[in-house]
Length: 342
Ligand SMILES: Cc1cc2nc3c(=O)[nH]c(=O)nc-3n(C[C@H](O)[C@H](O)[C@H](O)COP(=O)(O)OP(=O)(O)OC[C@H]3O[C@@H](n4cnc5c(N)ncnc54)[C@H](O)[C@@H]3O)c2cc1C
Image 1 (cartoon, helix red, strand yellow):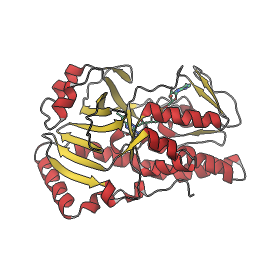
Image 2 (cartoon, rainbow, N blue to C red):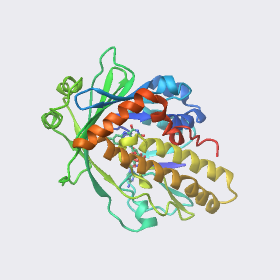
Image 3 (tube, rainbow, N blue to C red):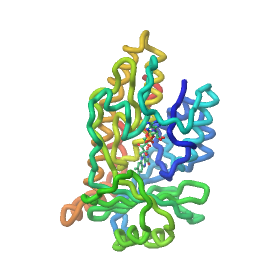
Image 4 (spheres, rainbow, N blue to C red):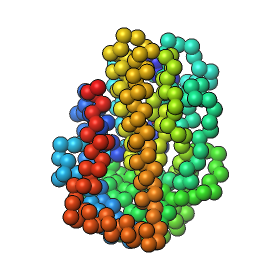
C-alpha cells in the first residue's frame, strides 16, 4: 500500500482529540493499545456547565461505563503512532506528494479530508458550505492536579470545551456562531485578545485559562452532506472526505478510524472488490449519517439562548441528578459499537 500525503511532515496543528471506546477497539485490534495508552490520558467524565461555570450535568464515565476507554490525546502523537505502525506493516508513505490528477490504480482510497479531490469524481462538484460556526483552538499548560475530565461551558451562541492532554498540556476549543466568515483559508492564526473578548462573560476557570493563551488558530467549520456515493468499485472515500462533521460529538477522527478498519475488513472478506466496496458503504453510511446528525443537534443544544436555555439547563440538571445514567445511555448506540466484529 502507498500513502500519498501532501504535507512535508506528518505534523498537525489541530491540537487535542477525544477518542471514544468505539475507535479504541480498532486501536486495540491493531495491537496498538499499549502504545496508545502511553501517549493518551483517560477521560473520566464529561462536565456540562453553563457560561458562569455552574454545573448543569455530569456524565460520569468512570462510574457508569467503567468497561469503556474514553481517551484524550494530542493529535500529533496519535498521527505519529499510526504512521509508525503503518510503516512497520509495510506501507510506503510518500510525504510532500500532493495528488493533482487522480492516478489510475486498481484501488484508490480518498482519505483526503473535507476538500477531497476524489469526492467530486464520485459525487459531482459540490463546494463545502460554511456551517456558521468558527472554532479557536489553543494549548495552554495544564494544572498539575488537572481533573481528568472534559469540561463544556455553554453560553448563548457559543461554547468552550477544555481537557488535559497529558504531558502537561491542556486543550482549548472555543466555538462561536459567526455568520460572516469570509476567510479563504480553513485555519488561520487567530487573535488571543479577540478570543478573550468573545468569552469575556464566561466564568469559572475560563478567564484564567484564556489569560494564558499565547498562540491560537481559528477554523471556519465547513461541511458537506454525507456523500451519496462512497465508492464505484475502483475508488472509495473514508473519513471527512465522505462525511465531514461538526466536531460537537468529537467523532470526526473516530469515524475515520472506524471507516479504515471496516474498509480493510470488507476487502479481506469479500470475493471481489466490487462486493467489498458496496458492503463497506452499506455498513458505514447509516452510522455516519446518524453521528453527523447528533453533532448538528449538539450545536443547537450547546448554544441555546434566553428562556429556552434556562428550561433546557433545568431539565438537564434534573436528569443528571435523578437518573444520571440516562444521559450516557442515550449514546450507547455510539460508544458500544465494535467495528472489529462485523
Ligand atoms: C475544532 C475541532 C475539534 C475536533 N475534535 C475532535 C475530537 O475530539 N475527536 C474526533 O474524533 N474528531 C475531532 N475533530 C474532527 C477531526 O479533526 C476530523 O474529522 C479528522 O481529522 C478527519 O480525518 P481525515 O483523515 O478524514 O481528514 P484530515 O484530517 O483532513 O486529513 C486529510 C489528509 O489528506 C491530506 N491531503 C488532502 N488533499 C490531498 C492531496 N490532494 N494530496 C495529498 N494529500 C492530501 C491532508 O494534508 C491531510 O493530511 C475535530 C475537528 C475540529 C475542527
